[in-house]
Length: 115
Image (cartoon, rainbow, N blue to C red; front, side, top):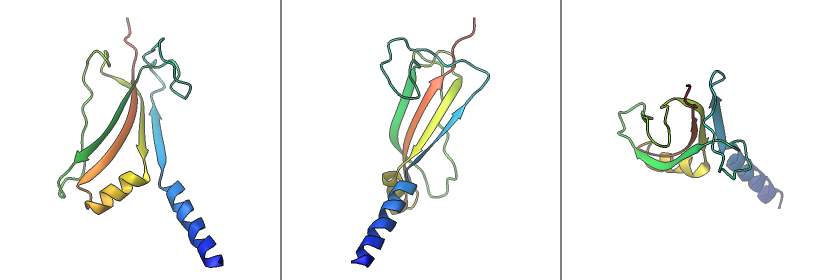
């Protein structure tokens, strides 16, 4: 009975430790506002763009670049806040495919246009 409890405790610790997010924020700019946003989290009142996809990489690739361009959703083309989230599912997918497929969850807020 003690072994089962210890195993469950260890498994739950691994599940919690494998899920994390990292947020980077520019202190010199102003986030692009969204007055119609009904979010109740850190991004309240900001125009958030979310990317949830799986990227394919070659085994020899060491990095991947995602380009942010000027568009209707990001008028300035500059980033104010970037959040990267890692989950257990993403780690397992990367391990099973030997790093060729990676699950990416990114939230970012563009910088407000300066007049």
